[in-house]
Length: 351
Ligand code: FES
Ligand SMILES: [Fe+2]
Image (cartoon, rainbow, N blue to C red; front, side, top):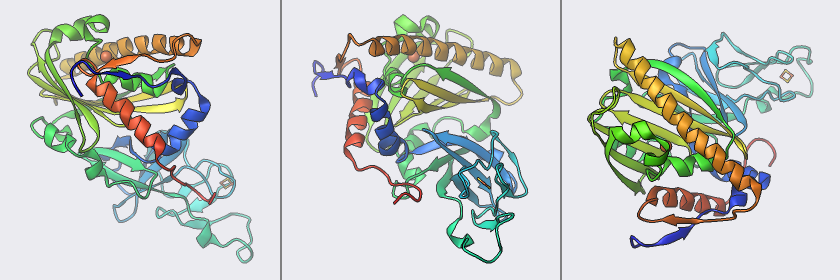
């Protein structure tokens, strides 16, 4: 690819079509790892966190031996929910609808009111399992039994982020949830390029002196090697921004870490779960850093929502991407095209 190469964007219809979205759920989201919480949230047996993988509700729990377990948040009786909050502690897993109880291994223990002897073979009605693993203090789940292990999935993110302080060097500040009216790919397209910085982010643009952007095959992500100018209160030294396909953003710096999971809720709706870690004992810096990040995300979301409106309106059907200015967005869109050509993941008991 030369510096003057122009690439067609994904069609506008892919950003609004319910059938494309349904296909992406199985071809992209079910195949990849998805951030659902922090490792420290599962400190003792019975601690749990819940999450949503493109419409599949899931939860992770620490079992009695201290092992990580994860399941679909779906009861095998009549599909009721096991948990309806973000996380907490439980003695046992009990369905909120009619009280069927499951062990931390997912096995069905009791079905109140059902005859003890009879047609219900409990061994066949355990919870649907989900893969779960931790990466450097972050808890991920994956619906596809065939997907690579989490470490391999992260690929070169590990080596690249090694020079930066780890989550354990900081203290957790907060989790902020953002709702946005755009397709998840509009947010992804935007996050994979720095072309928009001078126009959308006046403050951030002053703070960034240099940004070297490239795509990494090992792990499938876009990395931004950032040099901060020192202007502004919260950004200095070096930074690493990662857009990990399909929808995890990791921001490392010498002074803080911010990790975002973009959740695709509907073709035109996303939710971002944004976690912040900041220096221990420096509350003021932490608050300033998070306020700055919130402003940047609001600027990004603002333009993505405007783009989505225009994609929905039905005038624009496709555009061009510049290999020089938007190599990360080209890489992101290419991964989507490739994923949509693979066979879908089969889940649950439909087969
Ligand atoms: S749906 Fe869970 S007990 Fe009925
Ligand atoms: Fe941005």
